[in-house]
Amino acid sequence: VFGKGPYQTAPAQIKDIPDLFGGVLQNPAVSCSGSCIYSADGEMTDTADALFDGNPETEWIPFAPMASQTILMDLKKEKTVCGIRITPGKNAVLPPYRIEGSAASSGWTILADSTLREPSVTEKNGFREISETFSGNYRYIKLLWLGAESNTSVKTIAEIALYAEENG
Image (cartoon, rainbow, N blue to C red):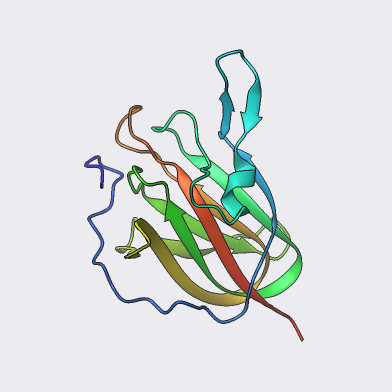
């Protein structure tokens, strides 16, 4: 499902994507802005743990879908980053996004930007997957999950898989 606002991308072509990127699947430290939810009894829960838990049934849930959210992944040291796979939630729209990398959390480099070109999207096990291949030495990877068309849009993320190699 794709939105139709001024910040939305055109539907992507479903393409064959290799099952594996170069490098090794990473488990970065994650911090997010805009992803806490409240239960009926008022308890706050941060859903960032769902991004790398290996279970696509649990989802990162942003609040205020028309706003942009930032997911910052820290690899703990500089590595050669090979690619990323983002699995939106089952009923989620695909908002525009930008992925940036940095060696020192400043001087960010744009690695992928769906506002400039259509993302590579495929389907696997009932989920859509966005795949971006890139190469560079970075410690930090930032995913900017940009605003959806309306506040009723669902823009959850079921999983993120980040691949990198140790610098030798």
